[in-house]
Length: 289
Image 1 (cartoon, helix red, strand yellow):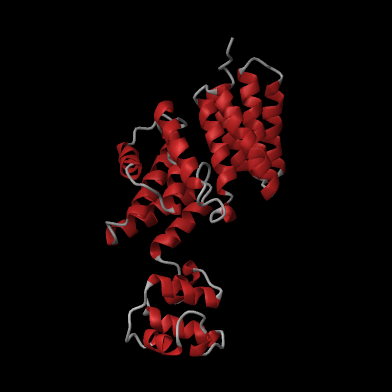
Image 2: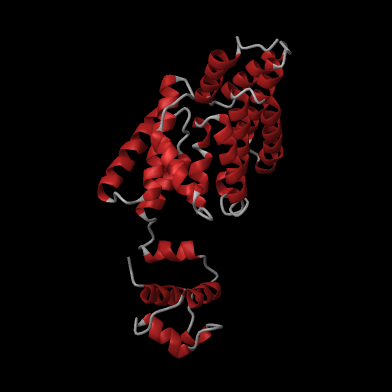
């Protein structure tokens, strides 16, 4: 990774800026920073980036020769894997994470991603949410004591809470919501809030907490419309129909199966199979009297 000063000079030249063109750092100050004769404070770096019209994240990307850091790259791969249905990609990612951790054993984010992916693969393989994962409890105990979470930690916990008992899971959901409020815009490119509320609604449905399930599923719906996320929206409608069925409306089964067929129509057979499997395994015979 290049020196900060060298990267500042590189970007300045790309933007055809002179050393005197910065609003809060003098020409001499920029010269000293670029030549590494003087260390740069965070405040000055942020000011320079404002003059560049650039985020710190993009600056670090350029500084790393236009590459993501290994951890950021793995995190991006994780967000792109359809965790519940794509076992092949999930196993491939698990192998990548394992190799990364051999080289960087103290990388906490990579470790968390490894545990989450491992848990998801076990859920998929066993077709059950009753997964024993002491490592997941360890991650929660570490993060619980922190005053704030990074956006990666928020995202990780949004994928991990559903393996915990409902009382602890509810505490996690409350904490995730508080932390998520700081990062909704930052994570909007992966529709973090819509996905999270959908998963929470599904979690409470599996826990027979139907009022809470409907609450979160209904929070997800307008977000799905806002982001034009028809796939997530179909999942939401399916689980609202499942709750309706479990509360005694036998006709709601037709809506669940319609959602399965809509996934097929969207050319998403894996999602159709996943929903149909959930329906047959967890809900079809579980009617509340």
